[in-house]
Image 1 (cartoon, rainbow, N blue to C red):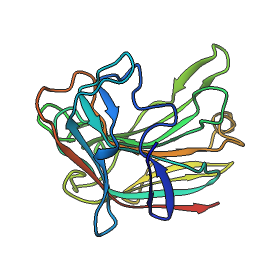
Image 2 (spheres, one colour):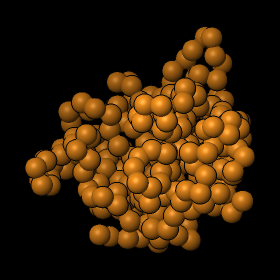
Image 3 (cartoon, rainbow, N blue to C red):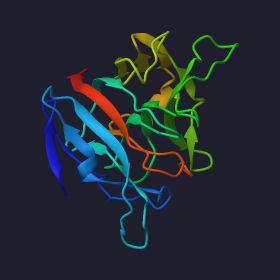
Length: 235
């Protein structure tokens, strides 16, 4: 398992549980798609690279970094330029691998391009809905024992295209609040104690990754998700 040093932390270049997810078997986590340049920017790529891994032969290699250490309450931030390409799925998120099961999970953003390679998703009823970079929070439904996604919230980058501009994405997580900002604008704020209790006492693993949505278009499909830095401040 390869590790890298970046932004003051150590990262592995695959998920803790392996190189391919059985429910997302069209991609595998390829260490060669993870690079750090001379400016110390992280590059997470996608590239056609079929590889046999156990019972699967995923067609595309994708870049992912997963923090070696786990984090508790604090402020988490990256500044990033999203990749360009069809049906991409870059993300900055956290989950609790030390828990008995998934969730909980905090998706600070998940980006989705369309078949025209863009993130634009205009919603005339919501001026914040220009960009398809929503945030999600997953918890348990105590009554049914199933994972529940709180209603997704649209991301906000103003007039700045997140694929051509570096945007700051951040999350403040404490016992009393979950607050997610895109470009300094609050896109989600959770203070409901019934929700926050699912995260109380948890240790969260930080993941930044490039990926494809299901049924990616055929072709080489090279893309580059560029991240300037990762910052964490304990709260």
